Image (cartoon, rainbow, N blue to C red; front, side, top):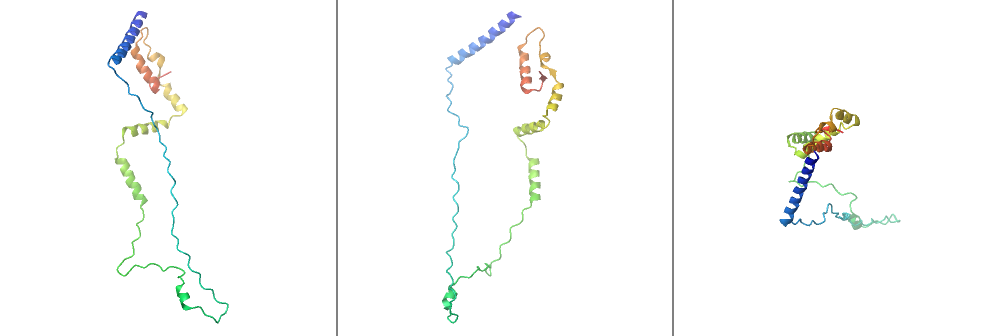
Amino acid sequence: MALRRCALLLALAGLHLALALLMARSGLVLPVREAVVYADLVFVAPPRPRVVAVAPPAPARARPSPNPTRRQPVAAIAAAPPSSPAPATPAAGETAPAPAPALDLVALRAAAGDYERKRRRDPLERVQDEQRIRGKDDSDGARAIKKAGREDCTKKYSGGATLDPLRLIPLLYDTVTDTGCKW
């Protein structure tokens, strides 16, 4: 057994050495990577406040004279602006604009549901949905029940008296994914 193990280790070391020699002889030069930028910060100036044109203040009306016998000139009264603007009325040939139609939220929801049922999900979305569903029962009790039904890893992948390195691959996979056997 020990002789076979030593032979396997020697063969593995020889393969690694051969691979290193092949890489050195081929002149393979690994590219030098530049610094990776994961995020750039862009500072955006806040929007300037809008400047609204303000009409010049209306000229003050002439005050009534303390002398009731004295009257104001007619030009001063005619120059005073009206207190409220007259409502705009459409011209004779024009019609008033129609009011905007109301937004039908029920129809929009129904259309969105139809679209969601008809669209095809990409594989990443399907995996995320499965994980979301699976994550609902990730309580301690649910995990313990799942683990209780699995076989013990120390017994499942033991090769008996012989050492089989190929059995380490499924053991490693089951250990990492926590699906096949329990420790």
